[in-house]
Image 1 (cartoon, rainbow, N blue to C red):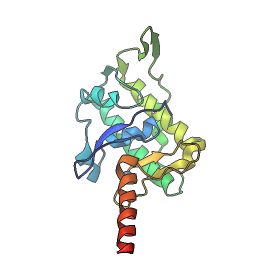
Image 2 (image 1 turned 90 degrees about the horizontal axis):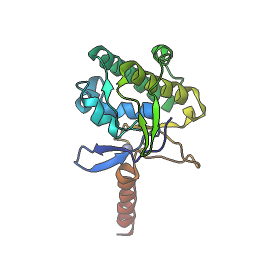
Image 3 (image 1 turned 180 degrees about the vertical axis):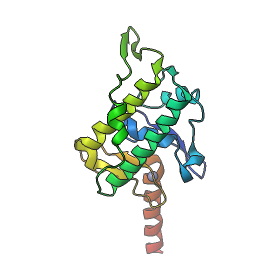
Length: 195
Ligand SMILES: [Zn+2]
């Protein structure tokens, strides 16, 4: 499920900037947009958009060589991960994962060690990128953290994450965002109670 990250930069409907760490690479993909109502959040319009977006994910910056057909396939994969994550967060079994096993057969991106640290052998092919997301989805939805996939506890927030913390008590997409809003609500209610 990849290493820890600072989180993806997000902007709330009220303009608040915050960071959201979904806890797994495959769940990071869900924040890049989607079908239907989620289309308004789309950031992956062209293959060229991938590089910037990946910079904030667990994969990190990399040059990608991908066809338009492979980008379309990435979006199909994104929908199936969205579908499964929603089901699992509601206590059901994952579904629509038939393509994951096929995509995971391709070799994933190849890491290289340099004096400055780790980087990817570039360019990463479309097949390798698809494989990375499919493998991560298989690991998450077939592994021990499957029961830790949750929706943010805020009623008006639909973000999905996997709680990888030791206590397993994560409720919010982000403490900066929904966690803080909940705290403020509690404080306001307490003030009203004493008035
Ligand atoms: Zn939230």
